[in-house]
Image (tube, rainbow, N blue to C red):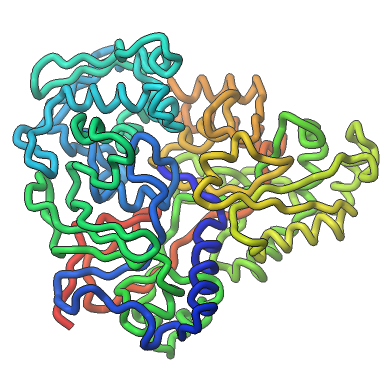
Length: 535
């Protein structure tokens, strides 16, 4: 699904607060924005501007929360996080497990009323794979389809493994049987787009002609984004007539308290207030485990983190229990491995790298540097604005200084380009978060750490791990496949491919008059299921 920096939302909220305070506004008082409607069919939410609404290009959670409302694809994840029919009515799989034949629903329409046919999916996937589109996700989510990599390399315009056999039938052939292939098609890269809409040129996605439960009615940057119900929707019709996202409008908790928004995420600064059972917010609090993994990445392609001993030393110099209790306020769970609790293959018996300062110092002595004085300068890349560094990053920089005698500098990339520029612009370390696209270990271990993978930002490579992942990816026996993934994860942890920090949870306040607002383990809500009662 979605990747994000640990600090994109943190930075955006801080920036919004600073802008409002510098203008002399009192948060939550007369100068704060009012809900667009006081009626019963409008859902008011807070948000920040999407970076793009192009499903083929988007690669982060901020944009996805809007895209999944406006666009849709052949399949979706159901309540059990299993692939289920969406625009596809049904499908069959060949005996060798490599060819999928999808039959589309008839009468599914784009927002402008044009009917969706199989050729629209072929066009959408070939467009996503076209190098001119600039997708950073096509190789990851469509790359199993035969011929996609030739299109990505500019060797072909057509995907050989995609055939339109009738107006409402499309045949898709992949390179090997893979149990997670259908789940990959639930990712926005595989969503259908309208050729004429794209051909309108420029940032066509500012007026998107999608197939989702909502249409984009209005988007005023840094002010508001309004979705309206799609009356032509083929699925469960939205119960609210509109959803208004108030963009960078203030601190969500303050807006929730004053009735400007109906749902609010709870940050660390407010956890005591909302967790107080005698307080006014506890009855509204919903805690949802998230299939997410937050970590410090190492640039394994250059000194000093091309030396595994240095990676291990920096990992074992961090007291994660202290981070979780004092900085995260126990709102996150300590991570020793990569796969989060609730994920198939989660290994309770995994052996992590423990907090051990003496061992960390010994590892530096055993490295090719021998002493911290011989280490090159080290900088960590993070997302943020104007020097506003998160408390957890400050704490880690302090621990590296105190425990190892190493000074780590911090360099920020603007949130709007962090994800899309990190691979080229990263320093020696970087901080990152990954949210599951689908509940399968391949979505974490293979996508993030296999040699050459697009999302392997640190350039880590290990032939032993690659071999285990390759076997696990094509092993159709679930028990054997999960065992191979666990072996790969253990090897990644021992090799300090990254420094695992925490697994996430979502703390959300929902007004009593809002029904059906459910945050998925992937961190977003399907808004067509939400209703707003009179209040």
